Image (cartoon, rainbow, N blue to C red):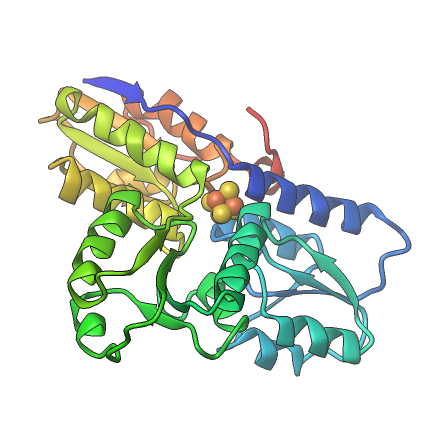
Length: 302
Ligand code: SF4
């Protein structure tokens, strides 16, 4: 059995930046306590669990606005997925200290969408409903419509004005283009603002490039991570590969790899390097017991 590490791997710049911001806040004696986080900093439970052990209170709830109801004082961290203007305003009105760990690519996506709206476009957003990034984008304007599948297209209004299709940063770039093609039948004038981030795109491209070489792909990622899910989807639907998704070395115990000759390993943009490195080292030996400890998950470099 040959194990092929598919590069690029490692935490993306947005996740590394978010971890650095939070680590700095934890070390700064002037940070107002308690420190709350509106949901998961990034979609990886190992990273979130490690931050929780360091004293950060991770809030859960249906929306970021609702989560803020649970905070009376201290510091609030906005996660890498970004927040709406209403969330920022409410946090300010409550007098909370704000630490913004929003990824630059997400911020840029908000700015571009805002620009299109100001220029009179009807903006459709190709994204995952109820995802925090989508929630943040919907806070830009109540006129933005989220679309994800063919059924959503059927429910769209007739419109002859300017229309644009924006995309969540972690979608499949090929699916975004295909969805735009579908929408052209309803709105021949629709423009595609393709905002799949580079970290997401290059991982998907690397999987597509390797498709002839592999008979199995292991995607290492958290089930809540959209870019990890998209990697598996691209592998199965676009590259025709058999693919499995695991969170850690220990998850691999349940599989029998004896029938596979060439196994590729890729990872989502929020998967700690330590997890992938441990899999690469131990899978060939058939060892599935992890030796990682909390701090390993917060190390951003190999
Ligand atoms: S996956 Fe892309 S958008 Fe998300 S944090 Fe990383 S760089 Fe930013």
